[in-house]
Length: 240
Image (cartoon, rainbow, N blue to C red; front, side, top):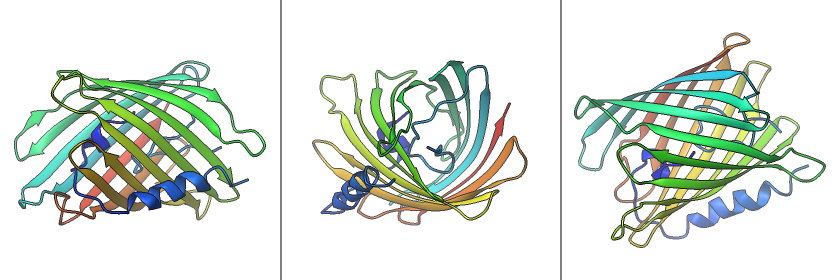
């Protein structure tokens, strides 16, 4: 599920979008695993029918005006039927003001599993409470050895006549270091009528047990309007 760069600040962009495009081409040339926190790039996989995943997160960032933002997040995914899952997410902003953010609801359907040289493909649709925003995203995932690549191409409509929608392109790579630890990196870009955006993130996750995974990451925007001091996130995922 994609929101407007999932809350990322927008900023001007020269030719950095070419990098994201290259990631998009690479995913189709590699000979299925699932993306997870701390990546914001989605994966093509869905939660198994009847199973659930609970994600808890803490995000810290600083705007260009040096305003510090702190947000707690909780989301739950549930496999409704084979190839179809439901996600409900609720953020709570600690700074600059304590308040609940808009709840987000999304569904994802696995169109096809990875076969031969073809990646797995999924479609996701999401919307927010309190706003007419809605997003449609195409997702591709491909695995080779210890590497897994994911590409997202989506569009978020504002639902308002005088507000343009946002096109989003995201690419991510995962590298397994061991059975319990993985390094991740991604680029997330936005394009709309007024300004463009690009943000990078690097981090990792560690499997504490069969059901529990700890994750961490740092991110940074590359243009004016981004979080100049960077961004950090910490999370915990529990499957049941």
